[in-house]
Image (tube, rainbow, N blue to C red; front, side):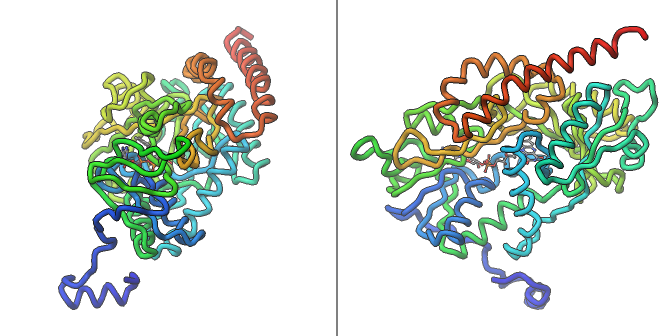
Length: 429
Ligand SMILES: Cc1cc2nc3c(=O)[nH]c(=O)nc-3n(C[C@H](O)[C@H](O)[C@H](O)COP(=O)(O)OP(=O)(O)OC[C@H]3O[C@@H](n4cnc5c(N)ncnc54)[C@H](O)[C@@H]3O)c2cc1C
């Protein structure tokens, strides 16, 4: 069914009794050309583009719960491509460009709101690294604009701009094309469009194992709804990619952490941009319903529990209230967490898996890319974990070796320079 004003009017005249479900709920067939595990945004998009761009329509998407019930429905809805490294910048800007045309393409309003994102600098060090960050974005062809302190104040008037603020704001930078998109709508829009092209979306169907054929090739999956055979199988299970990889007999160089978010009660329009404070790990935007959507940093211990720890929650609320003191009067409505799979050098892993028939490699979510350059203490943790994972990463990674070789000394010299700047800032004139 094509959604239009006329269809809405027709629906209203028939008391909305004749709408057809946006996608079917078929029984799984015994065999498919492709099985995709995971019904989040990535799995649904993969199914849709397989059908639309490559004519592969005999596809099953298997979701253990309901579509969008994983991270896709738990995220803070921010879309952006303000990444430092060229590999990430290209990937995320390609995605942002897709978002810009997605409502029209899917005939489904994903409520994209390009209200911009403001990244806050709280120190001279932040100012310096953000200048580098914004310039790198521009070199990669992505919009970025450095903001003075006054420009930041004009974009987010509720920020505490006083010089004795707990986290003084010295300036920042913005990506104007960034913003928010309704996460459920992205899942539903892709599901509807994939279903229309013949993809079977099978919910309440958990993959519990893989079927092996000749030469160790994966030829199907064991599920809670029986065996399903397939020529090719893709995993798009976000924080559970490593669990599925283990079932298939290999290890992914990712670590899974809980990432939390929360919303306040709704209020009248008060914040018309996304504000992110990488130094504190807190970021805020206002939803279309009026709630303040607050995102936190990672819980820094590996976990598959979709809860999140109190200490991180407390820290992010304290930081948010220090940045926006007037929010102290708001009541918190909900808090939740999702599980993200983090790659410690912040570079996408895209490539074949060591198991024939299974691939391409897991799509992963990485969040440390630009936080790393903020001098975040997590970087030390990264370094330790990276040492352990380096051998695996090297084997799996599709990035050119040249890019990796270049990156290590670059980071080391940046650390040295950052330390020198901090010492200069700390020492008396
Ligand atoms: C709190 C939070 C805030 C975030 N904020 C943002 C943000 O503002 N902007 C942004 O770009 N990103 C954000 N992210 C990250 C973003 O949500 C994820 O990158 C994205 O949703 C991942 O999509 P996905 O399809 O890969 O995974 P998911 O949406 O998690 O989908 C994976 C699906 O796989 C299913 N699954 C797992 N195991 C199995 C199995 N064995 N069998 C069948 N199905 C299985 C799960 O049930 C799940 O539905 C945030 C994440 C969190 C947790």
